[in-house]
Image 1 (cartoon, rainbow, N blue to C red):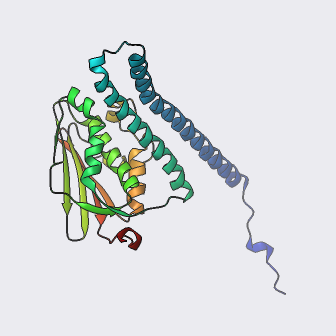
Image 2 (image 1 turned 90 degrees about the vertical axis):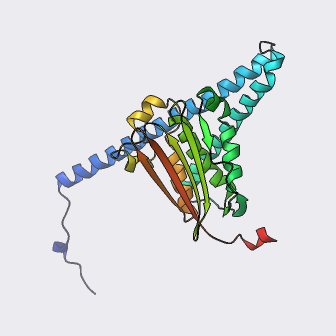
Image 3 (image 1 turned 60 degrees about the vertical axis):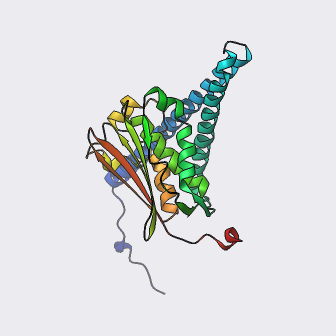
Length: 264
């Protein structure tokens, strides 16, 4: 029988143990701070559309809203309900990402339809700020992906563009079917992102200084979720920006055949 040599093991010193305990305490504190920040952000983000929906519906029920304005307000209520639906889906999917239970259901669909339906959710905001939208009338591009998950990607990128486009500026969509990839891109004019902050924007909870001052809403999770969905599709996402000019996010989905059951 082989005996272990007691001298081959070194007992940890008190300094090592103290350092390890401090590291664990720091990690626990950091996780707790992130949890509190997440709960706070979720509460705020859910409250915003719910307040708008409640206010407009109550106004129509008690007669405060004139009859000739009701269709306009119902349209805004519908937009806010769509935002709520996507927000809740994103939070549920974030949990699935973290515990590894997310599933992908591939289908063949035109990605322009997703972009068009998404931009309609921000119609009143775009009109109020005199924002031009270009590129939605390009030839249709059909992609094979999970429409619900890619719908969240499109929503997150469009919402980001709407938040940071300058008043009177332009949001431009690009769709292309290239040799190996389907390409979808969203560009907005505006302040852009600095070179220092560009590598950090896909991190969970990260918001730049400019983002904090311009954007009072948002979970700080949109681009983190987007990156996870892109990774699940074996796709790529990149961002380009020039300060005081533009920011553009580009998604490349690899060509693939739809599953047999979808063809049938």
